[in-house]
Amino acid sequence: MSTVRDAIFAATPDPDVRRAMLLGALLEGGSLGAGPFPPGDQGTSFGPFQIHLPAHPGVTSSQASDPDFAVRFMLPAYQSGVQRAGGAGSADQAARAAYYAERPKNMYPASRYTSLWQQVTAALTGAPVGTGTLASDTTGGSSSPFAFLQPVADFFHALAWLVNPLNWLRIVLALFGVGFTLGGITAFVTAV
Picture 1: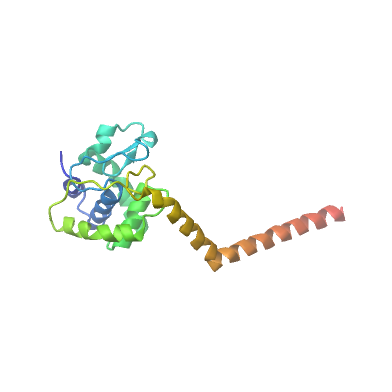
Picture 2 (picture 1 turned 180 degrees about the vertical axis):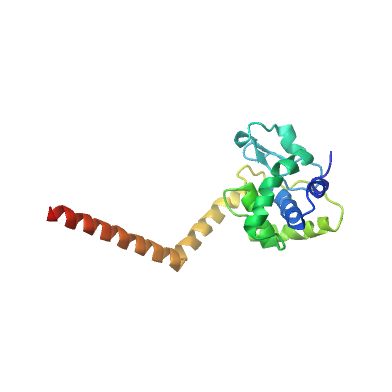
């Protein structure tokens, strides 16, 4: 069985797709090695890319855990993600490409993917890859010791949305639109 890095290098010569897939494997499965990869999503997602088996009934947990199969299976999604992100030359772009390919509930935290970026660049230069695992804390099935902090992060995400003046402008404009619509309906009904 290949390592994740070797499988990625065998599957594509595109450096942007390689960077995005390397980062995605670190974010999702926690390793660029040959495994094992901890299951996620309460035991329904497997392998270096945490392939969600209920969404892909034709894939087995053994296949999803095999780096060669998982890379070939996820390659089209990552190619599309890289195109959508406009490349993967930086940690931000590669994380966005991985987000588009993997489709987690929330975008990966910047602190997390920037801390993993050094491993990506090392893997591109041929540095040895680890075989340890780091469970994903963004797929919902996390075994991360910091998973309990997710509600706090969600609270601050909601708070950031609330303090954004553009969001309040959207709310005010929507209310004006509803008011004008109701006013128009009232005027039409009373005129008849």
